[in-house]
Image (tube, rainbow, N blue to C red):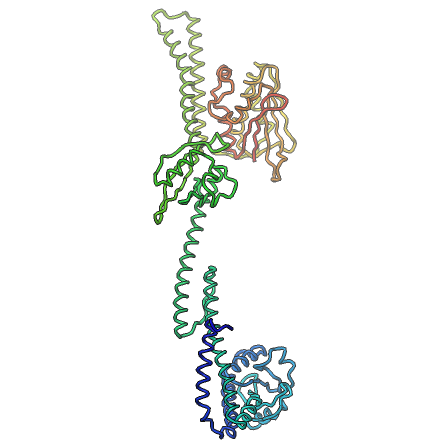
Length: 591
């Protein structure tokens, strides 16, 4: 213990004051204390014994040995003597100086003189040598009204008493020495208690500094030190509450940013990345940990770096449209805005993926252009031949009949186009209900082949059907599946050369673990196949691999798009690919 700290200075102050008080009071010590000391101790111990008995009687709740031993320690801490709780059978149920293991080793106290006297007269006082502790003790025992405890006994060692009596007999000098030792102990105890309180307050402060506000602080006392400690505790708890609220706000913000489809990048006033959400990492292809790095080391888009630099200077630049790294097919719009707090300026970058919007706009423009083109061709032919029929010198009967046949053929082409457009619109709007029923796949194949028999025969082609025994039936809408298969077979007939074979097959899907297994239906031809650049767009409206050949066949360019929508209505999937041996293959997977 050093004398420069709080504990050392307190020790010196208390020890000095106590020593001065003892030296000043020493001449007034009366020699009569020698004869009265033992009687006073006895009366005091008797009073403490009765108080202890009253305290034990007031708490008759838990009568287990563990609870009684705890009660003995609690009451013993209030007295200056050792307290022992004795049961009706003489067994020790609690002792303020023993733990549970020590209790079991104690002898039965039923024959102790003070216990016998207490049972007989209600009070027993005995001075004798303790075999347990090896010293002389003063015992005082009283009976108590308690469910488990019969006698409460207090024991006070007489060693200190004898020493004090001897010291009085040896003179005032020895008394002052003892008093000096007591003053030293009191000073040390006072310094220790004060230092312990300050240490407890410091421990709470350290716990608060570490962010742990889960446990309430202890009792700081009612003096000035306690007042200061309570004030600091209240202030720390308020700060902790605000820190907790900020943490909750940050967690909510992180959750919202993580769930956003838009990418967000926050940069502080030093140009270091403060926050990047998942969408921004995906769009900018950020794979490393971006936090606390300069934005130019994280964002490898020079134009985005220019936007962020402008925002950090306090300007609000216009938006920028760009393609992410290594993904030229996507289109992203970036907007940057400055953010300021306490005179500093940071920046927030927001990224919007507009690829789907651009694609939808392209599809819309292509759709309008294709519809206009598809309608213009038959309308021009119809208008020309109608004008030829309306001339002043009408053509002959054979020419007129040929003109009318051409007009009728183009009118039918326009009718098919309008019919296909209307059906696509109904499918997209969900206006065609699905009527599920168990359908024979072989019968469905035969119906499709029968419907297209004239066209197949005209090109001298052959259709082969293969149905696996495990996929003879499927639960689906037979009419919609029929229309999808008819369009696929019609497309195969149109593109495959004459004298070739078209294959219709059905088998279970063995790739997964679903039960029952999905059904796979394939339509394969021996035609020229699909260019790899066109495979991903083959199901778009009006998209043709060979436009001139498609128009010669009378197709509207909507057949495969209708197939995709029909299969989608049936909760299935359709894919196009090229066969290794040549030709195209379309695969329908039905649940």
